[in-house]
Amino acid sequence: MTTNAALLPRAPRRHRVYGGLTERQERVFTWVATAVILLMMAGWVGAIIEVRRQQRELARDQKAAGGPIAHPAPPAPPAAPTQAITSALTEPAAPTTAFINDAVMTAIGPLRGASGKLLFATRQPGAPIVKAPGIPAAPENPGMYKLASQIDQASRALGNFNLFTVVPLAQKQQGKIGLYYLGNWPFERGGQPKSPAYATPSGFIEVTPENQNTSVSEHFRLRDFLTHDQPNVWPKYIPLNPSLVDKLELTIQELQNQGVKVSRITVMSGFRTPSYNAAGGNTEGRANLSRHMFGDAADVFIDNDGNGVMDDLNHDGRVDVRDADVIRVAAERVEQKYPQLIGGIGVYSACCGHGPFTHIDVRGFRARWRGFGNG
Image 1 (cartoon, rainbow, N blue to C red):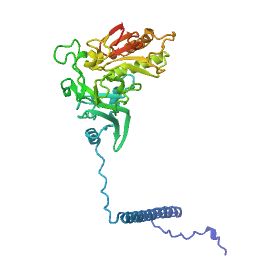
Image 2 (cartoon, rainbow, N blue to C red):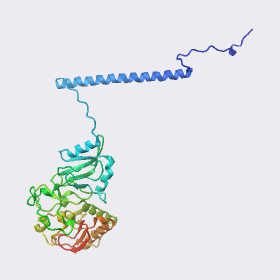
Image 3 (cartoon, rainbow, N blue to C red):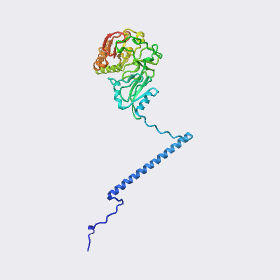
């Protein structure tokens, strides 16, 4: 009798791994286990190779040094952000970097001004840089400080923005700070100014041969606002209101929006010490309470060709007061858009060895005039 073997049950195969795994599952398990073991072996081999490499380098260094070399101490743990900020601000080396955490970077935005082109701010020693949590006070030592953002140990400079801790007025003795003669402001020794705008400046930026070319905005440098006297006396000291520089930058933007080319703008007169304002150079047209003494005024003209005088801005074939009027109109538009920058705007004709120019200031109230001489 023949039996169909295909119909008989086959003897079950014995699994290598118990627990109910199928044959396919056993193969997968085996491959995974093999891969893990190979990776572990590769790691061990790599570690052994690295140790031997370090041993060879150490032996080579010891041979070069002529003796054993102590192992370097492990690196210190990263400082907390507030510690990094504090240590950076109090670092005595100059220029110093004041580190600002990214979480409060938005608070720094207003320091750029309405134009977005300001590259500096001034603060009294120890005064808040901005009123926001996590931002430290200005350094106690007067000088120029960089601003940057920091996360852990990585830092990023805030463009070429600079913070100036000013030299307080109290350091002025007998009209001088150091060797630089300033003189005395109209109400410094008594009397009541008619407006807070005429109060004696409370502090001064120290300008040195090394930092005089520092940009305070896109178009202006620190040296543009220096008084034209005592050329060989350093350091010099000036008050400089960031709002003035902001208004000048916005005026340039208005001119460019109207199709006026502005590649070079000259500050004919920026800050004037009280001493120079009263007696230095040509004093014709200078007011006893000139805004130039307070660091918030500038006499400017557009000089794209670099010949030292105003350009023909209205393209009428001549250079005269009407070209200064072109700048005046632009500055008027700025005040309409930004009332916080209201101040004086004066137009001057050519006189006394110079061409026409426009006076712009941020005294805090509206003033308009036309004249000759120095603004």
